Image 1 (tube, one colour):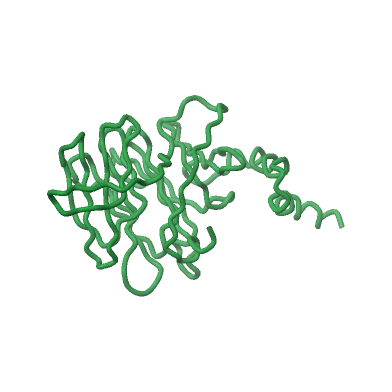
Image 2 (cartoon, rainbow, N blue to C red; image 1 turned 180 degrees about the vertical axis):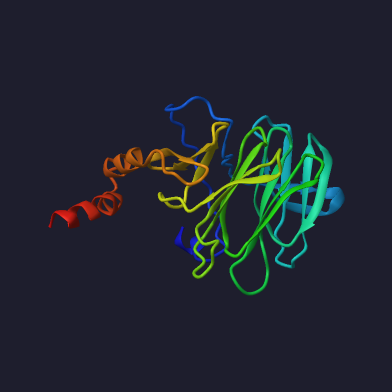
Length: 241
């Protein structure tokens, strides 16, 4: 986890967490174990993920050369393809919209978040002066988010950026007070939920207001994780001394 935050190229797989505290969201981060996928006619082999409805398959490789291929398939037909420097963390929605975190080559902390529609047209390209930690895509393909890792001295350090892919616009940008999340849930009411494997989901407004801060603190204190409890209770304990 820490190696990924501070620049290592370690890919983590996140288990899905389900709680029933709010109405059904527009979409939840798609958490997959990537599979190996082959297209013999193109002499291609790479990782792949599939849309939740099973219609689309997104496959890519990261060959470290700065020119890596990706393909979007509907069934067994290629419907979009392209080349990126180092595509990673791919996800595809039920309508064929897909995203990548592009790990850029060269010195310094940097990356570009990219979103495409079902025919491969670029919707969003957001260049950030930080390594990209993870990203999320709603099942319907409307919303997406990208989270950066630590980048000392950069305005992009630890920032969560949220996009409306239909409007092709950035609609939120803030540093989450609860830290790096594992998953994201998107809503049409101007909020987003950040999900944590051991704690659940907690709501923010798109301007960064931590709406569920009290629930988050309570979840930390009751998690059974001593380190989490100490982090949350620490300031209160110090104040009482």
